[in-house]
Image 1: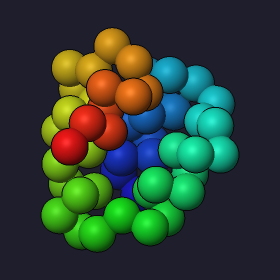
Image 2: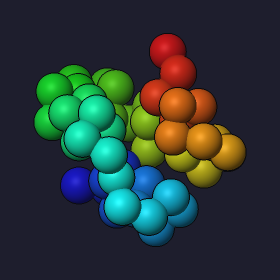
Image 3: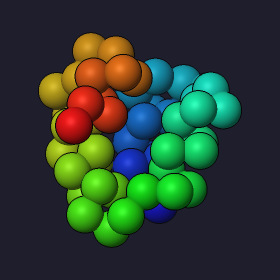
Length: 49
């Protein structure tokens, strides 16, 4: 899944809460997060609504 690969490359090993968000995310959310990770300085910023 694209957001997971992007997040791992940028932030390293992902905590459980991130894996849960990715597993439960809608296709729209996954697309949004994939874009947000490009500019996010933290994991939390990558998942802002």
